[in-house]
Amino acid sequence: MNELRRAQRVPYPSEVECTGVGMGMSPLNPRISDLSTTGAFIDSMTHLPVGSKVKLTFQLAGREISAIAEVAHAMPQFGMGVRFVELSEEDRLAIGAYVSQP
Image (tube, rainbow, N blue to C red; front, side):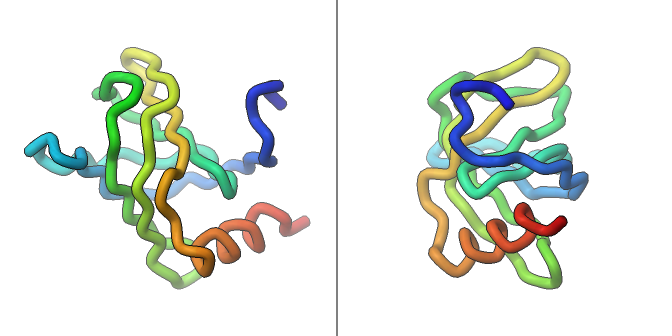
């Protein structure tokens, strides 16, 4: 695990709606490749600059998760790592339950 990461990440291939916050951009429909209680990696040919805020909406165990995240790092042609900055406690608990499954 990367030393900068404080939370365990697990593979979670899932479609996600990704919309820039305050950017007036069209929604991207990339995929999440991994997930933790603190963030995710978004697979996408398009990436946003580090520091950009995005609204993410995705399904997890029959529940819709909605979060505001900040782009923590970007990898051109691969995607971007995002850190959750607004996530309800219920959604964080749902992600935590998923991540901690054996």
